[in-house]
Image (cartoon, rainbow, N blue to C red; front, side):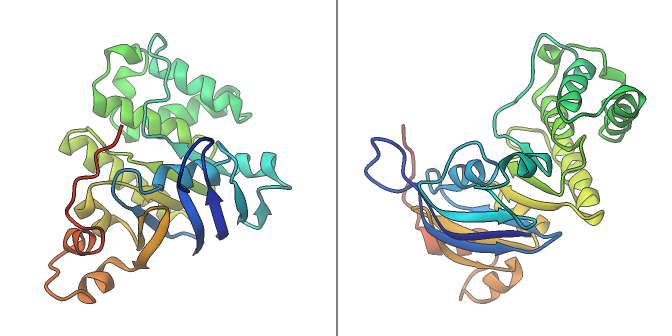
Length: 247
């Protein structure tokens, strides 16, 4: 579904590449986790694959569509759940979703039915006509998710989709994503919640300094590292325990 070949990104004025000669193939209907410390290149990679920023060099294709020749077609088959809330706080949940759905060409009763269906599934139907500014973090995360899937994308990019939410909201979001994946949606997921990633992802890649350090099925990675009890142990063994704070 996704073929990445020697992809590079160096921001203007930067000393180092944020993504460096990265090659990766992701199969259809995978839930593929991109794991790494702060500044490892996860968000930069997702931003390139979703056509938000241009690579410095290299290439990638999604569902056979090359980003250089088929940029507009690519955008129609992907959905993006960004790390920050991408919502209009002064509008209601329904108004936000109506706007985002209409940008994908969904209209009328079809759009209304899709919105109501997702709101009900994610426990938000009673809040459909409340302003986003009154919502809790978990509620905003769920609306953020709905906005990205109304057009039924083939590929869904998830950049920290459960960050800062309560356990109940996280559980609802993950279960909904699993159902979407079962219907055929390929997912690329980043998170610092390694226990969540271990349970949720079919395969993961641990990246650092813009490069893939290791990749594979979570249980195989754990089994392949002596003294590792879980994916977090593998992650620390590979990336080290030094703090990665940056401004």
